[in-house]
Image (tube, rainbow, N blue to C red):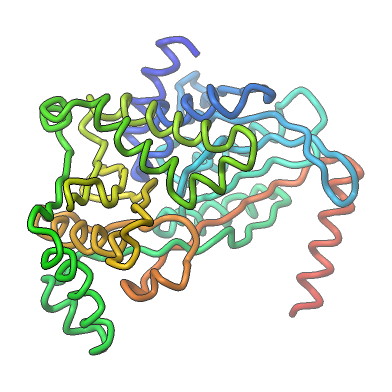
Length: 355
């Protein structure tokens, strides 16, 4: 990708009414560099009849193993992302035209066009489906996962008042126990470039990566080949790229002259996206993971942020904090190969039987 592509991408990203930090090229290119070495990358521009650039996309061309054999797929690049856009465009109608153009003009036979982890885009994803149906274009859209979020619309004490008595006690206890146990207890948050530089960017990254490697998550990933090295390298590179833009948000919980827990987040347009973190399991009896989450929520309220995206799956422990969530989706456009035709009819029959 040359600089003109990057500049055009940024201009379209800024003009879009739908904003996802995971559609920033810094995020996408880092994923490609680390995870995409065996996949062909397709950076694509879409123009209207007047020759005006109206949409852009970044895709992988891959061969995947399915139940009906191998199939060729163009799919989104969404490494470690929460929710993304299928393509950059000013509205859902233009998105639909771009996807239709990709379907019509890609020069080789394909089984599917798969778009994963799609944001609902308010009502934009529903509108996109309406436009695709009107073309018409054969597709399916299904739930990918549910991602919890914390709406920062109440003062902290009002939020606690809405919890059950048992939940209130647990939440208050997380920070109180650590404060009572360790006189040097401290919550630190770095957001601006100046704050990171004052602490030291590289020492900070080394500190949190060292803790992650010794965590239970790190030990589990270490058993899966290069998974641990790839993940930690990914977040270090993303942090270095986003710190100058004022988008990186790293939180530390200190006590006993020690790093007890950390969270590496993206903070974009007053939304905090929690991405990568852990706690020192030697201090597990004090629940430092929950304590740092409590601190992040309270501090985000003071800063006037609008919500916190917890990311990942809707695991049981997250329900202690919130019942709110946002769904992400998979959109599949069927190609015209025999495999795609069979799969399309299977989907239609299954849908009919459910009704």
